Length: 160
Image (tube, rainbow, N blue to C red; front, top):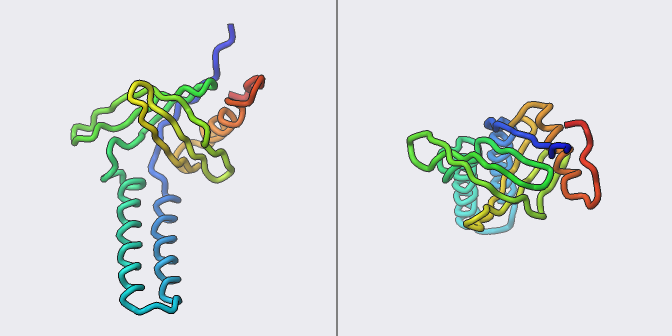
């Protein structure tokens, strides 16, 4: 009996995401100054955009404000995900959860998004993954597995 291909990935912080979020926020704030609006409207919008960017950066890059950030996962060809999250407190302990990959995930050359539903609680979760968050070989295996995992009557390639 042939085993189902599985990929196990330990995630690192992304330097690309850490640069991209503030860059987009600053460019958006600069673009707002070109609009024909009163200065106080533009200033208020800029403060909100920069505050949002700081919050998102803290959550996704620094992982300080995220409730149980994803640190590792294992994905099988049948769409089963084993998620490893940090516990929400300061203990540094890990929480393992089982989930199923849902439709709506995206596999591209520059990023991958995952959408899952946890078994038991039914809570949905998402993650954006960039190539610098894992080794090149893991990135390739993940993309191959996701592209062929849900294809009907497709046999998973033997590159894993």
